[in-house]
Image (cartoon, rainbow over all chains, first blue to last red; front, side, top):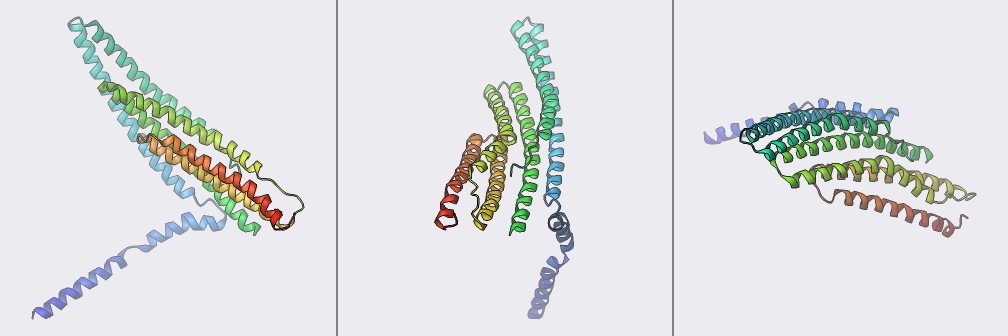
Length: 134
Length: 160
């Protein structure tokens, strides 16, 4: 009885193991690979266009994430410096207040640098993309 | 033979274009990450963080400019150093094909080295710029060796 049960379990396990890989939609893996990489290569197109598109899309998402993080850090930092300035002003700590003011100015400059200078730098890098030197 | 060479060179040209765009994206992302590090460091009062991040931003800018401006100029100079021998028959044609492929591979390899260094620099890798410059130096050395070996081989084979 146990041998029959064991055989049944083994057969079920084997079926599941074999059916697992077969159920993977290989066409969903192979078709994009063919159409986005090898087909353009054979048709004389750009085989790297698909990969470049994906990389730039992910880079765009990463840029949005980092920019949001920078805004959050800058706002929190500005709040912290404002608190520091208020505390310094309340008990006559001149150095503390001036440090806080300088800190706020620094944070604002940093954010302006990041949000104005970096996109311009990106445009410059994009506009001066060198042609292949070979 | 020439069609195969043209195909390989055009593939390398497409790879060059893709790598330049990828490099620009990585440089900007890495600079933004370092600016975030500067902001965080200045808020915490961690001066060393701030200076490290400022140094990383400058290093990333230099790497980007080296890739966009320096690598094409270096490559053109190195390719020009490989001599073209006239009236040497099919060896000359093979030489031209080899120069094209050597130049293409060298360009892609240099750009790959810069991209690796940008990625390493963005996560705080200290020797990022030096490894990129060493790789560029290796490629130039290989092209110079090719420029010496090619005419010697042609003369050895008795084609000229």
